[in-house]
Image 1 (cartoon, protein in one colour):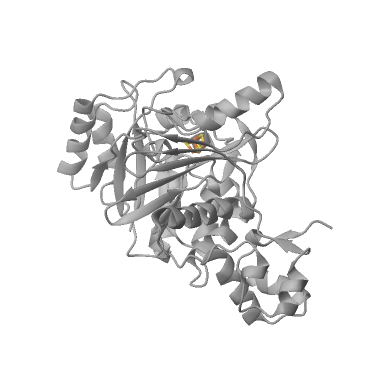
Image 2: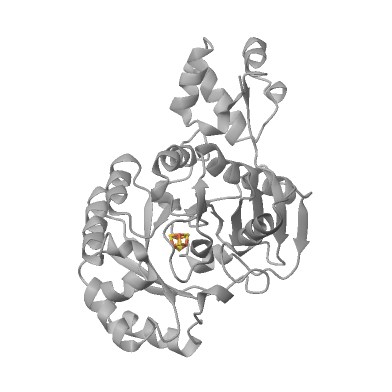
Length: 384
Ligand code: SF4
């Protein structure tokens, strides 16, 4: 029998696993802390666990990290990892350090089925859902490798955004236990406002998330009306804007002091006119507590789209701000290495498809002027 991957479990799951081994819950809590708070992989290291438990675990369980295909480190401390998830698929994870926080952008799927027009991941199609353990392995690896690099035992990642590759709400059953580990005081201990799920608008799952684990919610809006959004975010044909906004309102009922972050990728001549800004104001003002995050598009060849000029973005932002809508413009980052989220992973997939011979390369470490996260540039900024 294959050893169980302990990264698959939230604390209740780990307690159930330990119970099968005849161990009490407090032992599961100790084990959980060793894994997530101390980054331990070797049961022999877990000095306060009874020897009998360590013996039971070895052979029956493991902490299964993801193989790292490459690591890009920027001058400003931003790190982007490419992880191997098998069968020629790779996923991206990005750490973005700022003065007052460290944000990790995590992938939830290999590829994505939603197919947003401006998204490189969407253009690659869908390969598979990640398991809970693969979602958490990104956080586990990033947190503990960064601590080593920075020579600290303090927490480095203060915020998590589910905004990497994939639509997290289309991988709901794996997502929720992973979120619980992020929030658990014995795990990563992040407050629910420091963990954000970004969705293209899977309405029924927004409702479920509200019940199961109401973390911060970001919604990829990108257009103020259905005809345009149908084109940019095909899921809109199933869950049009009015339904999506109703789901946002219901979500906020569970956390009335919160707000929704709406992401809006600025595409030249497509969704960036002053008229559309006015339409956006009409759609949102006074209807839903929100913040707008305007994201300069990171072009990639297959999209056929262009980034809006700065002047255009500023003019669009002004309409929103003048109307009293809190609006931020995301700084563009990472243009020099991989213009859009999913491009590194796409290259791995292309190589595999072309030659059907992807072998796991040793970790490639690139240290150059990577300014930031392409994934984050595509999506939203972190919230408190
Ligand atoms: S923007 Fe998000 S939901 Fe849309 S295709 Fe890309 S990864 Fe999928």
